[in-house]
Length: 374
Image 1 (tube, one colour):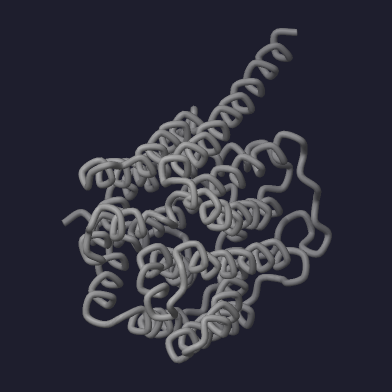
Image 2 (cartoon, rainbow, N blue to C red; image 1 turned 30 degrees about the vertical axis):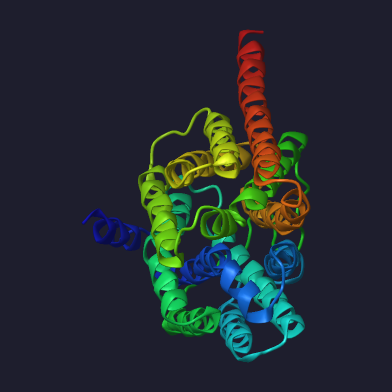
């Protein structure tokens, strides 16, 4: 009952609905990826390690799109619409092709377009705590609806049905006409990140590196190792999203965001080492709350430690995407050993990143107090 209310509340803010819908499409693609990996592997007859290239290609180009957009593009309605059409076309090709190589190319094109659309949305809200919350809450809200929907599509058909749904979803935001503003730093003249901002950008990269290495193989762990059905797995991911809604939508202060990342790392270890369905379910669901409790706080901290927050929006998204792109490759190497090793390595990366974020946050506060007293 709370989900429609929260969605309505998100659309009552000053964030343009078109941006929220575009981020919904982007999030839906990433929600679909771990759920669909077993089905993609079956359709193309590839191994668990090889199918991770699907996510890696998508995310590698997401890095290019989110990093390069702020350097070579200016926010505009034309870019918004062309990018959505590209997402729709690439997903339709993914559904129609019978070649794994063509699928990888289509996922790469999808990732490039997703990087652009994500940069567009975040560049308009970065540094504004309320509107950042509006964008952040789209992630878990989308997961609540999309995960079961994709689970049913895979249960009744295969990954091709899922890709058709994604292609159709990309058309929906085209009716919107959001207005765009350029960074106050001057648009074409970007500023460089200060040292603390660079450290926090690295924190985001290593958090998503460890997280994606484990999370992307969650479907394989659940289906192949624990015997869960695709629909049951999708419901677990939906619960992961549900608990993330209040965490992402919180409008108050977010001190000690790194602490929540440390707890996320613990969940990653438990997911990889899960010997039962209940351990997997508990760790995956708790992961949703801890991650979304921490991530917006890291964004706020990054904006606080940046001279021009909007210029860091693309850097933050591309750093996270870089982590997500390398994560499946790291995971593919680690799963050849065991899922437990995968969980431990991924958890350590996330937990260490959380500890570094705490150090940056409190070192800055201590220095500020000393200067005031001096």
